[in-house]
Image (cartoon, rainbow, N blue to C red; front, side, top):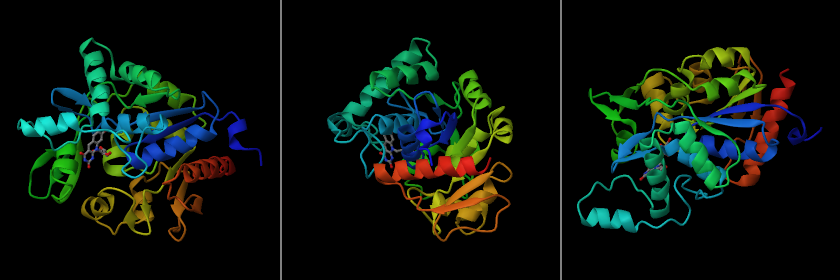
Length: 311
Ligand code: FO1
């Protein structure tokens, strides 16, 4: 078996938060330069302290730069929080924990956007400065805010629901705002892709915002597409996904429930040992828990080989 890293295969990975970033990191390490593009959710983006915050773009960027804390997954490992402490002392909103080093990213991005740069340009500059060579593309340069409609009839901005309210208010559905436009860079990457990988991110709030953009699902229809389940043995590795599946999807959380959600888009699905189910397409049963770098590299190799077997 020739290691995947030697064969030219252009891969587009659709990713959201921490789980997505970890698989992108694994693919980044096994694929040769120029053969991986990450298309990242910006539905979590919001303005806070007058700054444009892009949590998922930053989580993928920091992970590829080797700056992310292994456990928490977001922000910068070892970051300090002096600014946050001072903000708290002065009664400034402190529910979203912005680290001192992390703040430089938000200042840089907000300034670039104020100078008229696109989110794609600003992200490319941030990646360059942090030594991240792989293209990390925002799914859109236009605002596409995700909000959560709660069962009590409230509409909360995504980060307010997830972080400020600790994902406690029961969800009736996620609402995706914006004009539905992706970027030409995303469409160009999809048009030359030999494979699309839907990373183990939350389908409702990290992947759906990407899939609903004009031209994206059509591109997946033309390209072999494999997904990695974000649910293992009925539980989410991180975050509120399991509850969202039962609240939004109306079914018990399982890899199969996720596959049903992606109806028709998949040509293959990677699940945790014991989670396979009768599907119309091949499923890869393996260990999809990817906390360590070795796990990420192993899963990335397995995925590439699995995708090759689908041809
Ligand atoms: N998640 C939290 O649960 N609490 C936080 O205070 C928090 C701060 C934060 C700062 C920067 C950043 O890039 C991410 C941050 N996150 C925080 C994670 C973020 O809310 C989620 O990981 C993603 O939005 C999930 O897709």
